[in-house]
Image (cartoon, rainbow, N blue to C red; front, side, top):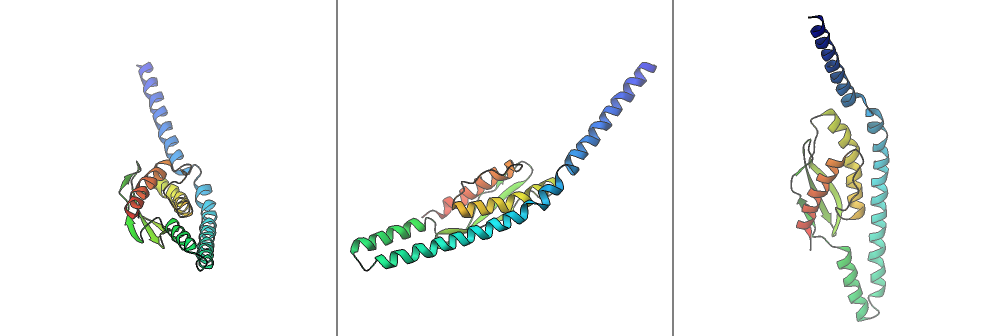
Length: 180
């Protein structure tokens, strides 16, 4: 009888240990570092990418106008440059709903002047504290990179693989609707 009681107590102790370890892993590992440090960098990246794209657009618009009066070939070059700068139709395009394992992701691509100016998350996993933590970190990075790349070809954010893949899937669908 004593042997069976010892086995039961050891088994219960092991189960309780696993439960505490799971709670510890879920709620206490690396939360402060991911939530507090990355967002200021991503905000700086967004403003930098917006500044760069604005500068690029203004240079592209001024250069062809100087060449336009010279020849007819300059006019066709201007047309090619404009078509090159505007691969998308202006408007708002909602992507499909993509499964990110812990929830669903859907994005809206906002196109102005033929370029991606913003990507908005219509839905994302936000019902668990870990999901909120991951997406607070990953969403600004994904949005900034998509605007910078002007496509859905973005890098997967470390620690947010499922959200990144679902973002790419939904944005690819939205941009396919916006194709010229």
